[in-house]
Length: 355
Ligand code: DAH
Image (cartoon, rainbow, N blue to C red):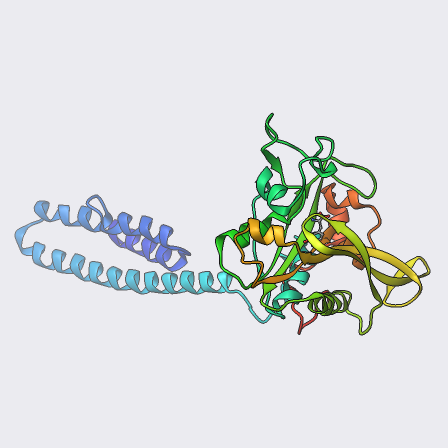
């Protein structure tokens, strides 16, 4: 066997055993490059007697052709295999139930906001938003709150400037004002969001959540308010019947004003909503004061309606049996893992709110 034949035999073996394209690229340059086996063999032509040259060259050409064929066949095989491996490795079986990415949980407050939004959107309310940083006019003045009202006290409100003109909103009611000022009646909105008061103990945190409701139209009365809240409470607690009572109250922005209590009883330390003879306050409401309508450029002779404000954290605690409000804001992953909700299970009325 000549030296050339030996080398050809070796590279054929290498081609046969190669496993990927980068190995093949190396072998290719060993054979076909300028200093590769084939070219080096051609270089010998010059030193041969003329009558041998033709056969010698023909032989190299046939070896070259042979190697090229073997090489391209093997390259195709390797390429096909690489593609198939890639496709197999990247394949996602969409029929498998998800398991790996179920690592986050929805906070009970977000869950309750989604639930309440779903309930009210079912009866035609749309969702509005307002900023956490408000001005004194939207938060107090437009809402008919007198200058000397205790809520305006520095001890209750976080002011952001010396003049007490900019503040962290103390309730979601300023979203009523913003909504009425930017649009024309009728209005039928809810506005969930963060609210702030200078208060902290087991049932109060400096930041908490409220949901405002507002329905203004030509003939809206207390009966509509009662029906609306009755529907909401039943849907929210997922019960067929509830006990609900309106207690006269006072808010500067509503006249008349009421607080709403729901009836409950305790069974093995668990709250059962809708039965029993204990009462729990869950929201404030009333008919929007004509002064508020005037401040918001709504014709109070043509339009009237109701508003309500719900403490979201309180409802979340009640519905999901959480007894310390502060735990909501501690960012303890174990707590969230226990009380949180599946992010893929978006609450809807028809599929179920909290399953
Ligand atoms: N803004 C009130 C609060 O923070 C709650 C409230 C009461 C809102 C009555 C209303 C309402 O819209 O009509 O305590």
